[in-house]
Image (cartoon, rainbow, N blue to C red; front, top):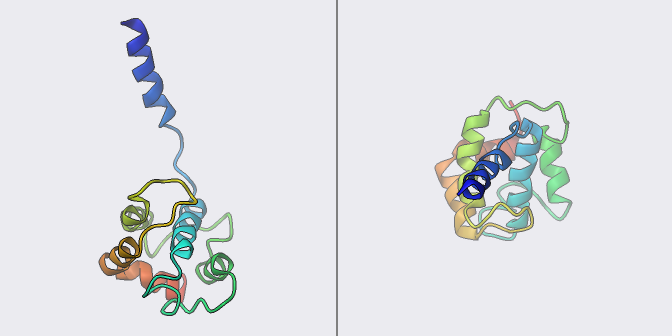
Length: 120
């Protein structure tokens, strides 16, 4: 019984720790969007062209800089908007479906604007 309690406690602490920096959170969203860049409503509207998707979006948004701090959208908003993009798992190499990206852009037009226009 004691091992069971210790195992549960270990799981709780394994999920703890400091939150990811804003730059890392932003880059995670960019990576997931880039994995789905061939979906309708992603590559062309974001003006990605044939260049490097991640590098283009990092430069546009500013989140390539480790000191990047989210303002518009806020950290909380980006976490909310990221939910459809990680629905199938948080593995960084797992692409969201086209429907999940469309949902994120539909429910979060501020995310789409941030990716199109960059940080205010």
